[in-house]
Length: 40
Image 1 (cartoon, rainbow, N blue to C red):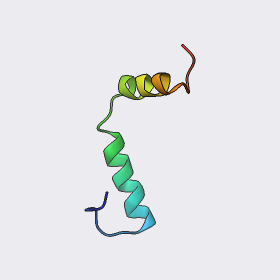
Image 2: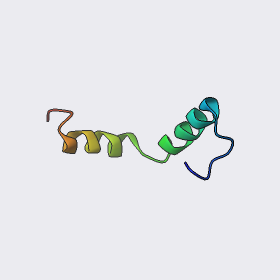
Image 3: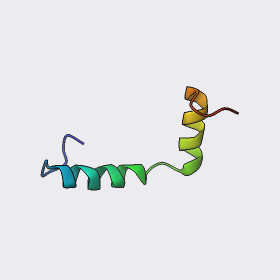
């Protein structure tokens, strides 16, 4: 995130969107289950 330019709100959300695409739905689900946010 620090290397992303320019630094405005819209550009930040676009970069977050790009980064989220790096994780599968299964990885995210497993993370939330392991963190205790989702009951098994």
